[in-house]
Image: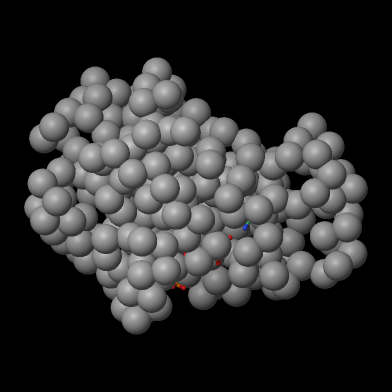
Length: 243
Ligand code: NDP
């Protein structure tokens, strides 16, 4: 199994779903993990349930708060080796029905929130000239999705954040990759109808929807030394859905 003993990791949006599964995967591999969520008591509860070092309140849309939290985690633990910019939201709307507040919240959470997290992570990792960052893209960011134009656009931007940051940070020893999950059963997709689930399962060569752990395992690989020559990649975790 991947060994992350001695590594310090931060996972945003670690209170549930893919984020919480990632916290568990990193803790299992020996890392000291701090998770965040918008609500402090939910974050603390999640941290206790997953064996994380701390659960802290953070809204990733707040650039100053992200910067100061990342700095204080790195200070408290002496360094920051791994950051997973996982926090994200999804709201569906057909083109003609898209409301401006959905555009604002989606872009400020998924795009600006990821950017703030990657910026702060890079600053914290720069001193030691080593680190691994993973951001959460989506298959819809590459292939599009009817009724999800805003979300899909935000995830296309997230994939590009990984590629551009990887180019910029490689010489500083910092790797940046994205995972692009397919349909993963979490709160985010809980609203999918049984028909939609069956349709997606039918289109998936591996014959099932994804589990949060499927994505967490890919993230754990990407932040580990086993992926030490991998950067700027967008790794699909979708059971072959896009084939
Ligand atoms: P969930 O809805 O289950 O969890 C989302 C997490 O993000 C929660 O921990 C939530 O914390 C946190 N969060 C949301 N908004 C903010 C914010 N403004 N500031 C800080 N934290 C926030 O989603 P998933 O686990 O399914 O998704 C995780 C990531 O994976 C997202 O980026 C999503 O877009 C992406 N993804 C998911 C797919 C899927 O099929 N599930 C497919 C492709 C990509 P809290 O509510 O406690 O604040």
